[in-house]
Amino acid sequence: ATIKDGVNTADPGGEMWALIKAEISRDENRRRTENFISGKRRKARDGFWIASRTPYGHRKDADNRLEIDPYQAGVILEWKRLIEEEGYSLRRCAVYSAAAGFVSASGVTTWNHTKIWNYLTNTSLYGEAQYNRTRTVRRKKKTQRLPRAADELIIVPCPPIMPRAEWERMHAILKRNAQQYEQTGAFNDHLML
Image (cartoon, rainbow, N blue to C red; front, side):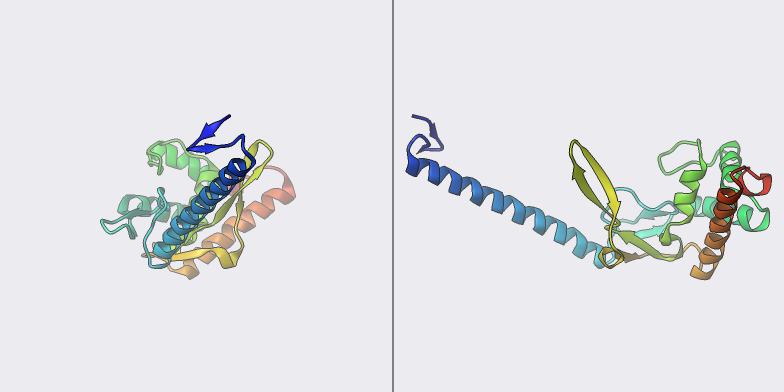
């Protein structure tokens, strides 16, 4: 006879009781997880930044709300100037940033165009940080992070680094440069280098 938690699982009644206890435990765990997640989402809706990483250009204040990080905001505005006024591409911004010693969110001075694209296209720059942007999907042995539907996003208000109209203008330039690169299939000095 197998005795587990005071229940004889070799006995049909004991086996049934063990299954019931296991299901109750699974239900309690599911509820705890749901409560934890809903609590995090509620705090985000109330304007608190609960993710571990902050959007580039911002940092957490003592109350876990986003505030502008002056150094990172200066880097963002320099890229904006380079793109809009000097005609720099993201790749050229990356080279410039490494040469200037700009520090990334992870504390390194190595840059690439994808990292800069991600920073410059983040809506937190105009005061609307997004929480709950991705969901984890398990497929066979891998997990994959997929974007959530727009109605599932939680907008966390934060101080803007630039007005939305300026962000949209810069974003339009970035998209146009990317489309021109896709059409030509080659790096043009004024677009990509």
